[in-house]
Length: 148
Image (cartoon, rainbow, N blue to C red):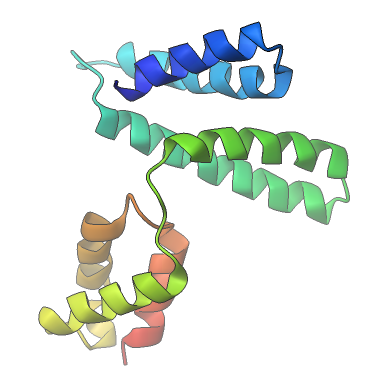
């Protein structure tokens, strides 16, 4: 079952069980998927496109939570956290920092990228390999720490 169908089924279940927070988050996800479908030049929405949209939504929620916590608006942060939980449930499992560190170090040494000047190539390579399994900020931090 593709992600669009999973979200639609989730909406039905949330409506039946009267889970308003989950329903709100699922409707937001469905809205993002519909925007993908109506995009220019898009004939079919793939799961990869949906995952990228979910990752963007997840990052937006994390940023919002950080802002709301700084402003001491726990009520708004709580809403964002509940939506983030639903969004993350549709994303592939994320790598831990230690696992990602090992994989990136191996990837960079294998490709001979050890200089600071190769930061762009290193980021492109790491994002290509691990972009769907890790946050871009974390990937960047690990690469910066590794390159001399």
